[in-house]
Length: 284
Image 1 (cartoon, rainbow, N blue to C red):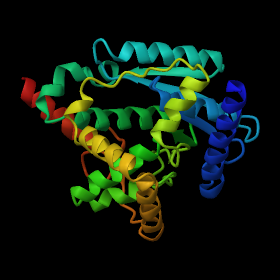
Image 2 (cartoon, rainbow, N blue to C red):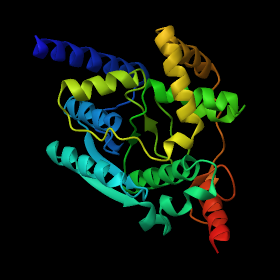
Image 3 (cartoon, rainbow, N blue to C red):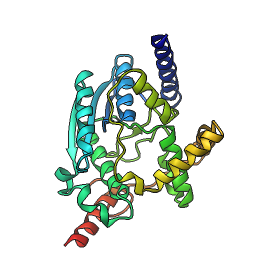
């Protein structure tokens, strides 16, 4: 009975992901897709699903892991990433904040209200730069329904409407050096990702980042989970509402090359270089 339930759950999960892929044309035949692989349940599921679609879409897959420099946390995730990439015979490229920027998150987290601020900026920079150097056509991330709803409401609360164009299951290529991102798990609740890992006995890194509790996202996550418990379907309704909105309000920002690092940027100096300059001044 357990095997039947697992089979049915896996079938329904794959069916929902396939619908997002088809509705938004996330994959095209013969593409090279880089997978942002942290070792957590979301990125591992994303890699397993893309491996399932590999032959159907004639995909070339490669994974990218980023070591932010968090003692006692990241190494376990990296080990899990290595294990599953090897199992699926997918090449894994490992990068680190130390190697790219000469610093670790543990060294600079106290300089910001939340460690997620520099971490997000630097991770995006490393992932895009590496995916571009690898010649990837797409960069797949493990963002699930919960992640997207949280990000949407955070930007809404901050009146940061410019970020709305960055949401959705697929981001178009708006600059030659900016690899389009896709989110196959866009309509999959975080709870279902956890169920998939447990039902299938997949070893994933379940531990939460020790710095995540400082963030607005963590507080919003708890709040949304409570609402979802009292009013099931709330998260999906928020996503549907946003889906209707962003379809008709896609504002594109003109991008240039950062004068310092040469990466795509909407400003003369990109956020990564601006942040590195700020950090160097603070720790001098």
